[in-house]
Length: 119
Image 1 (cartoon, rainbow, N blue to C red):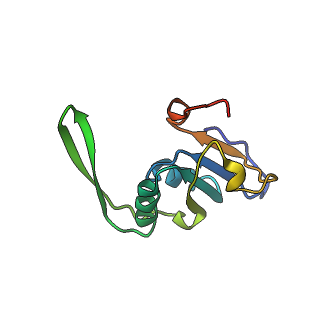
Image 2 (cartoon, one colour):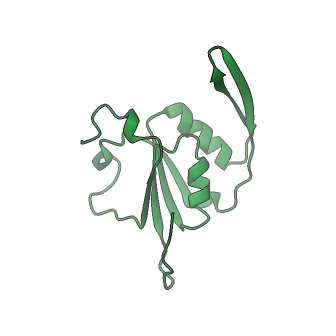
Image 3 (cartoon, rainbow, N blue to C red):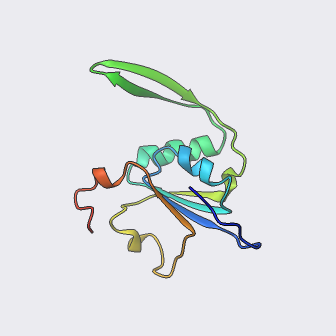
């Protein structure tokens, strides 16, 4: 993501499909406020735990029935800049006021997972 230099303006980002927040924590290094949304309650709960500095473990599928267990514990700088929320990317009007504006929006691995991406 390329950002223009701004003169003191607080930048806001939206991370749609944030999963457990990896990209949200990176966005928080450049943006003063990040709204991070995922459809999965489990992902949002894990992201909030990581945000608090807790250790979270989960399994990543490698192939067929082979998994790798990953432990994540990252005391994050600027973690307080992130607001994690569960929500539906196709119904953002239920989450935000219509006049909400963002300087950057990240959709990572999201469009291919939506039943109706044109909505």
